[in-house]
Length: 281
Image 1 (cartoon, rainbow, N blue to C red):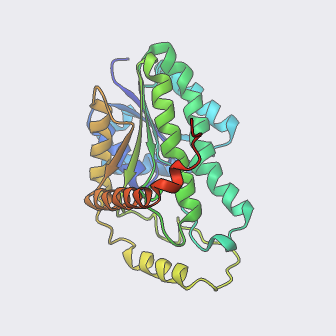
Image 2 (cartoon, helix red, strand yellow):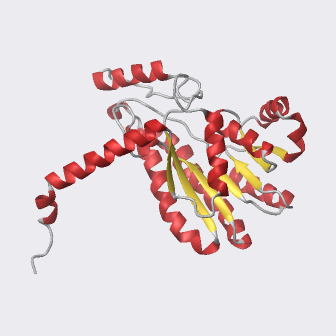
Image 3 (cartoon, rainbow, N blue to C red):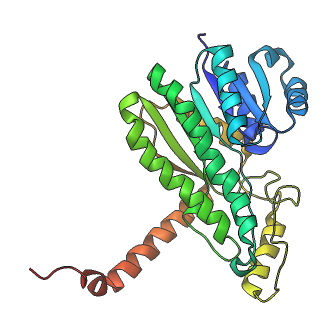
């Protein structure tokens, strides 16, 4: 096997699907996971019929058994795993008080624990071959948050910081890890088909309602192009020394800069209190 073997989770639409197409166009062998692999295969065939022999769609539902089965099948068929793109995820948005813990756990099961399980499943093979790159789709919301985003931001913050720690742990095995933090991307992410809200809503939080209304207007008007995000992913994969955290989109850089300035300002304003806990030797 001379071609790079890439696994993309959540490959049926949005950034995941565009990453599948970009990888195939670049000559990679691409494995896409989906709950509906037949439909995914049909979509790929419609776009790149001449690349279908380099594509494999596998059913996966983020249970431990399902993840292990997919990874084992990829290794058995292709002998290696060069890149894992952990793309699958969704947002549950609403007032924190309204969030049922079952809804929160369901979100973390996909955004965090599913991603972690998939990562753990490929690491033995990457260590064995002493090469690999794990791309974890995080979000600008992991760094800059606001009303309605408490749970989604928490899940993506977990992904970002886990990725940074993992990057240091696996560097000795020539394995790279990058958390990508894009600004809004023009996909179905904010559609009712993808976005979820608490089943029970008190209606007591006007700031949350205003934010959700704004996100509704933003739907399909985001600045980010999913095809260009896919190209950025391939560029990161090709880097000899990729960053452990990378922000994508002009809006992400502007929001990051504003947040950095805010954190510094607050830290400086409260420096005396911060330093007051130190032992006075």
